Length: 536
Image (spheres, rainbow, N blue to C red):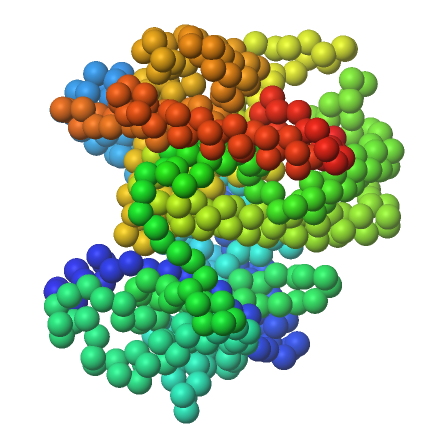
């Protein structure tokens, strides 16, 4: 392959097509067995690397180097950072915490479990990413993979292990002497598969001849994901394809998604989103599709409490008097009801996860239909999940308040990442304002900042106008502009010009929420009609 073609392929966009594999039961069990052996091999490599990392982090010299490296980063001293980095890399190589040692250690382990070298190497790469987070980022520990949580079988080379071919105008895949085809369920999947078949039939007529980046629909590599759904084994094909995904259409042939032009300011909270655009203002719960998700989450909480009671009753010796889990080696005993309830919980969590992702994608597609310029605040979901330093005493127990459950149930980080992907892939623009933008503290009527409590959801501006905190923040993000240095700031003049129109949409949205009877979390808006949504 020439250098021009390699550079084009690196710059080309990619997307993943997920299709279910049409396999018999024997082939599925063979793939599941291979995935479980890959899990065991990965756990063996993880144990080896955990020991090496603990030995490395135990040395005073390496801890001192990390501290000095952090100070050099704060002072932006590149020369000192380079010097310290070389010393740290030398110590990592000395203790066997390097990619070269990692790769070589996986070779005998993969042979021990009878795994193809491509699968073993790919699994080693996945584990090494976790090691890098511990060494260079904020990671604390690398984890083992539990029984039943099977890793994905990924072949980074399309010509090896998992091959993709066009046989009689039919997509045929092969893995470890197992031949299978995908199950095609709708028009979008058919259009994608036809594009891949067309490329395989005319492989030479790609973007290499034209010298331009184009949607070639070249299959880059394939992966197999094993899942047990409602007691049945199912294998899914994850096919990475070069180019942008095909457009989706409704049954009548009209495009499913519309892409309009305009500016959208969006305030992303831990459980809600508020957005302002030329066409509408909106305030809604994140990752919510009707009442189904809230009811399922409530059943999930009930099952978790039920499992905890059963676990404590069957294993009293594994817990301290205050209810905490005892340290050290423990042997666990589970009842038959516990095992059955755990399976039901796993199935329910899978459904809730899918519903959250679908709800977020629906919201993102709707927002994209309102405009092509998206402005929001920087990502902070990971910071909000951390524990606070102060301990709040609640009855007999002390707890450190955090937003972990809210973020887990509403996925604001996934929403923000998916918004960025959709806007950039469809010709739009995505901006994040700086941390000192302080949209929730600004008052455009007097041009001053006023710090407000987090519990203050409705407040009054200096001219007497009552606004909702999140909607008003999205309004200020909607009125962002660039200064001479390329930094985003609030445009006071634009705020004054657009406020009368936006205020009308703001009041209509609040009234709609009140009349609908639905509860928007942490909004400060009380519903008038209908039954309130029970989220306890």
